[in-house]
Amino acid sequence: MTTPGPPGQDPGNGRAPGNGPAPGNDQAPGDEHAHDDASLAELGYKPELKRTLGNFHTFAAGISYISILTGTFQLFYFGVAHGGPAYWWSWPMVFAGQLMVALCFCELAARYPVAGSIYNWSKKLGGPHIGWLGGWLMLTASMVSLSAVALAYQVTLPQISSWFQFIGDGTGKSAAANAVLLGTVLVAFTTLVNAFGVKLMARINSAGVAIELIAAIVLVLLLAAHITRGPSAITDTFGLGSGETLGYFGAFLTASLASAYVMYGFDTASSLGEESKDPGRNAPRAILRALVASFLIGGLILLFALLSVPDLHAKELSVDGLQYVVLATLGSTIGQIVLWCVVIAITVCELAVHTAGIRLAFAMARDNNLPAASLLAKVSPRFQTPVLPAIIIGLVAVGILFLNVNQPQIFSVITSIAIIMIYLAYLAVTLPMLVQRLRGNWTPLKGKFSLGRFGLPVNVLAVLWGAGMALNLAWPRAAVYNATGPQHWYLRWGAFLFIGVVGLGGFAYYWFVQRKKTGVLAMHAAVLPDDTLPGAPGGPGGPGTPSSPSP
Image: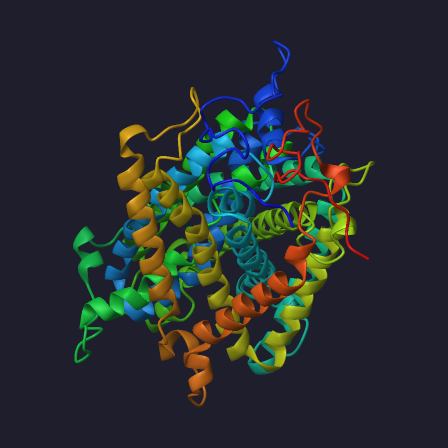
């Protein structure tokens, strides 16, 4: 087991992160990757992944994970059903909260542009135990999210053509079975693309994002051209929440999940830091651009959809959602073109989720923090990417998909919980970061992204937002966790039960088994001139201490 120095400081040198390069990290002038490789060395790693991604590639990774069209088309019906048109206000609310988190991530991305960013950041700021727990929650959530996004094919493809309904008539178990079939094909595709290397993934992802952005902007313009009512419509609550303890506020909190379920994943831009050009400068920009672009375009789509739909009270609005709005407002021909663009958006979203999960598994395995770590952390010499994590994550996602056939309620609960785990993983970064700020141990890297004097208040808001929204997401609502069929207490309290099992069970495994083996694997460890200094990265007791898996 390694024994790092105080969280937020470089072990053995007493400096807060950002006060200068780590010892031995001086690079020759003109080396464009000098700072990026130095940041890796400070964490104890040597550069292994090929730096091929440019500005648009990293931006595309972040925005495709958020996926404006995927999220809005999948969840619009839920927001309207539980909050009426006034649910739209949850979109700017969630954006404001997530912006606080993203700004904190930007400082970290500038300082540590590293694969598996959430895991490495929480480890650097909170210590190895917090790092492992944050990484474990994020990795589990990524695999479940991969399954959940894959199911979106069933929501869209059969509406384009009945030809895509391969099993049954699209009702009951036949719909669930067909969703698994379509989802499995999609997961197989993303597995193959990711196994063949980041360059192929980036090309497909960037092309898909370009199509998605153009389609989204065109959709905004088309919906705007068909507006039939004024903006006062987004104050209509449909009388929801009347008679309830919290009134409409309670209904609004439930409906806000439709926005909270969409606006996350922007950290993917930084998780590709080891494969990006100048990520210390470009990753923060990509994070903010992805979040802001998603907020603006997604917000306009939702707004104009509510203002242009022929009948604001149509029951299809809270059943079929945006698919109904597009077909009813724009006609079947244009509507189907838009739906094909949604299919592309779902595809690149799935690709980004899979890519992020692979980098996270690689990062944890590189620290010998997963079973069979040396195999999971192996980088293919041909494709220069970790191939085994791509295959295993894909297989696990397909396995989770099959749960949807006979137990769709349980699958729905699990997918909702996955998003809570992502919010908790984010909290595992922002909370330790706040602690380090209060202790005076956090200093942004000079010349890179910095919040300056706004760092502390932004960090406080990020923690309050993360904790508050995680609680809101986990609240035992029947509408979320037991929407159909007989009521079961274990479904209503599914968030607390599932996260408790995953979190406590996973941490117990780590504590009693894995933590005794933790340490950067020798094949991935940086070799520094001062690596013999006690406590230094790569030296005895430092986080870069090479280790080998125990027999």
